[in-house]
Length: 613
Ligand code: AGP
Image (cartoon, rainbow, N blue to C red; front, side, top):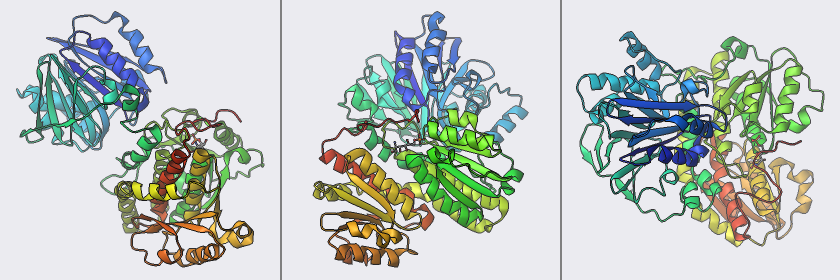
């Protein structure tokens, strides 16, 4: 995700843009840029300097001309095109008068670019966003006002956008529009603002409005007017904002973890967006490994740490079942010290939210030293892991600030399962119709996660009744086992209480001796293929006095007989259940920690990124 900001009618335009970009850096920072517009002149500066891009942009702007009362700014989270200045926003049209900034993904950018180039347009970047500048240029050439030129262009665009457009031939006007990617408008006397979210303009505007999907807004110093894509007037929804700045950066939530739990549907949508062509081909633009090489893979080894290791364990089941390839999953810090066997056709996948975990980086270095091809699954563009691997697949969860990983986990599972479907497609181990059905199911998970999030209160009320518990077991079978491990890790990290994730089938091989009154057993029971067996496991622990909390599907009528508490979730394809079942476990761990009055975003002893061995 990227951050956008705009202001019209300001007496300190450039500083407003740069300050706002600083506050939007958490949305992405691999490059940044501004455009200032006044009658007949569009001035642009851009910079790309890793995590310091906004600071580098500030230096670029030191000699900016003065006297501009309007401008737009952008901080980038690269999805298409390397994070270099040439790909930084704002992008210009051929005339250099029209400047656009965009957050989102234009799915049909390739075909649009071909058509525009055939009509003589010259592209200067390798991004999907630049097509917008040239489309709007063509509509303006027909004599349309800027707002109508933007509307007409967006009628043929597919994908997600929050965009802002300026034209030196229509000064002191910004046109903004939104579909899926967030956009707010703010007003104060004589000045009007736009931003990806409120922190960027909280100390500038007095009144705030949300822009909804397919709404187009024309901002001018005296205020704004909004229309739908057909041009009919619409009223923007006014927001009640009484936040301080720190709260605003958390999106109005008490902490980043809550914000990020609630961002999981968006993280899933973004990770899957634009990764399946209309002909059904699954594609990862940034994956630099040939289809032939993927066909010839004989074994996959996944290496990761913590939550990422749990996502990797889910991937094992998916790749083996759908692509019929043997898969091994290893703890990154163990992999490099065990003389791993790497033969021809071994593909090693390093999974990491930060892409900076030293254990995972050292593991893939060892794999490469032994001759393996390496793919990185990273949430941070151009992370060390992404740079050192032979190829990368980016999750697009957006920056994850809270130490306890949540949205990155579901995005990793989605990306890895999509990769498993790609392998199945290339190796023809599944019928195309089955792959299509699975893809549609995967695409539907974001809505099911959104539905699960509406049940937060149910999960929290159970946690409040179990605050005095000191011993937790999390049990699961098949992909429910890594889900159980993830639930146990969340609880450990946040509550500092002892919690263990176990394969349910292992209980009678020892751990059952620990079960007694006072112990809480949390079980994942949503896989119909495992349901009967796990219910008998729960009967065993219940008979020995344990308190049972079950994650169960809405239609499960048997669970109440063996569970004291039930976390209801929507039913889905078993392989997708970790992305849904983990949600009540995240909320449960959060609520226990809050009940114990613990700091949430920075738990004791832990760091967001473990860069030391
Ligand atoms: C998860 O909540 C923890 N923060 C931790 O286990 C984390 O998953 C682990 O350190 C790996 O981090 P990475 O995904 O950035 O490599």
